[in-house]
Amino acid sequence: MPLHSMTAYGYGEKAAVSQQGEGLTYACEIRTLNSRFLEVNVRLPRHLMALEVDIINHVKARLQRGKVDVFLDTTRTGSTRELPALDAEAVRHYFGLHVQLVSLARASGVEPPQAPGLAELTRLDGALTEGPRQARGQEAAEAHRTGLFAALDKALDATVATRLKEGDALCKALRELALTLDQGRQEVAALRDTVLPHLHRNVLKRLENLQALLEKNGQTRSGLPSDERLASEVTLLSDKVDIDEEITRLGTHVQEFLRLMETEATAGRKLDFLCQEMHREVNTMSNKLVQTDVAQRTLEMKQIIERIRQQVQNIE
Image (cartoon, rainbow, N blue to C red; front, top):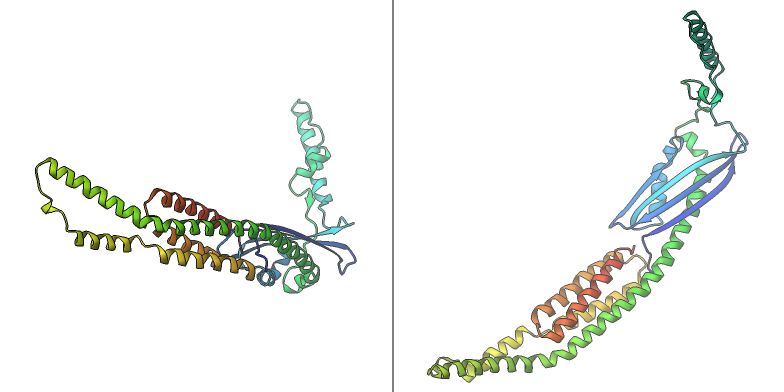
């Protein structure tokens, strides 16, 4: 089952005929972005606001996570019914004002003003009237339900298709990163057998240096621990640097990560949790083993986990 990306875009359109016989076009645009939860925001013309809750529930039935912005609109085709109209009374009023201004200008001995042109008239307050107000409320909105939801479904289909396509690319990238991480785990496991001898050599070398320093100063070895005590301390130290459990748990987490990608389309939260657990195991390894070769590999593994985590943030 392919993963779903949370970043997508979808568009849908539906042509219809109104009850008055006018051509109508319903258009819907959907944009989705990353989010921890599902957040649906709908923008509608005011005369369709009664359908907002139903639209939100419809979107939630198709999408599980992400910030979802839904833009819905209606346009009439082949009709000027909704366009502004000229208010004849208001225009006559402004022409009357112009006549008065001309008369006053001549009486004052100044040049009379020019009559306003069409562009100036249309900018004057009240010269243009709004188109007829559309009926509002549940009953008025219901007349648009079929066409509006048809456009919404088309946009949702396109959005889901985009999420699947992006999710497939994400899945391939994440699988490669997870396998690379597991390869690093195996390399650390192979180096584990070199840690104890390395530890023994370091302890013995320090003791030899200390004994040489004592002899140089004319002191005896009586202050140094016995061989039995030394062996006991090395054993305790070996237990502290044992990473068998971390290696085993990390392998389990990687396998579960790969399984979720194959079986669950909306595994984003679970994958994010596994990223935290994998980082915990690798961090413990790096704290236990400070040997150069192991430290280098655990650092690389941390970087891989961070890349995985960034990609997982975009999964539904």
